[in-house]
Length: 433
Image (cartoon, one colour):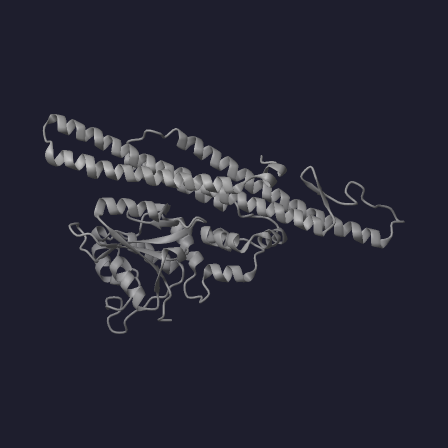
């Protein structure tokens, strides 16, 4: 359990510096890996084909794999440390707010608790004047409010400390991993989930609405914004926040409820799709289903229904996959290129990465030639379900199924395996209703 004075005096900036240092180390490891493959392994394969050359090539490839895996593991360390720094910053701000309120109310802090003139000596008896009773009642409420904030601050700090410590201990045991798939799809993904869990636990779920409002008002505007981008679903369900927070989280125009869209994606990321789209994959079906869960209305052509070139939606099918794949949904429902172009024709807009928000859609467009996907074709879609305080965009997707994984890390692998990708982030803003 983190103690009052430990939190009050902690240097949050040092954790943030440590996170930045780990990011830099991860970049250096990835760069060294690429150099070994480009400047070492490739020349060997091209010009030294005998047994000795092949053995040297295998050794270089193993070294490159270990550096690539190490880079991903270090990214995981950076994620956890960054979440720890942010969580401690929130907790410390809440603690400072509690001490500010204590001073305003004429209370003092002793042994990490607020105390007042009547603490431990409640005025009782029939001869106590009414003004004394009133002062006691008022002080009791003020003391309870301050101590509630102190307890919340220490809870936030303690959960962050425990979660981060446990995950960093696990990451420390993963050194010298040579399986790049394990490092990327297991170790790094778990670290990303722990990062999200730490941030989610900063929110005082189940607490008295008055305490929630006092907690929220004590945060800086940037901290409020960071939490709204990191976990809109938990915040939207919280009782006690100002109504305008909920409106901003869900979307000011009321056309697509971004909270419900993200909730669907987070709840269904590992659930089987009810219709298999075969070679198309189910990534765009998953995104369209998330949009539908957020309330986006169908657009049906009056003459051709969902088969028209300017339609979006899906209808109940026959249960025969082949027929349902071709006749009961629009092209824009199941194809990434179709959905992207349809949205951009109908009021939606592309936004830069720095402005990404939960409820936006990420599209992958092929840039490099010589792959199975033609240059210029958009071939993958995913839902933005979180943006961490350091600006890392988290995706949730199908084909393959992942929840809250880093766009930066997924893009890196896509570039390596399939050639250069262009990432487009589109904000759904339908104009047909």
